[in-house]
Length: 142
Image (cartoon, rainbow, N blue to C red; front, side, top):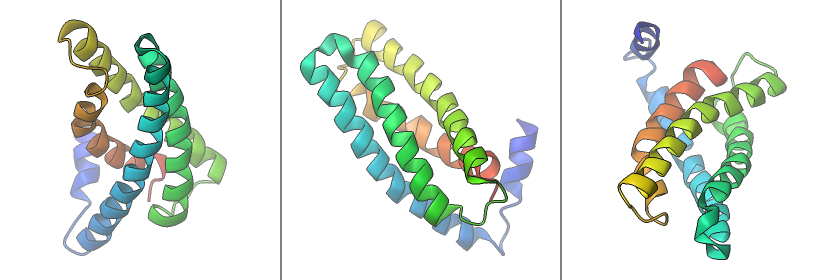
């Protein structure tokens, strides 16, 4: 955890505008990811609510590729890695938050009886900031 805090501390007065701009662009791309992932997820639960977990996985796979494509072109374009390494790291980065989100989803739906239509939206409060930090400081290392 200390290493991540050291990385976050590298955001100083000189580059805070750049980081803020990146976060805003990341957020805009995140909206498209959310729409794509949610559309795929809802398609599966429209077929059967029992397919909520399958829909969650399918939506994740498609939306992470969307995220990689747009973040690579517009947000973290000065990255030092090759595209395949960034793609691999992007899937690993989103994989970590996907696992966390999946645990939260299962807990919310099975234990707390939150609607499978609502639970993914609640999870975004945790996963969006986590994804930005991991992508910025590790996957793209921009």
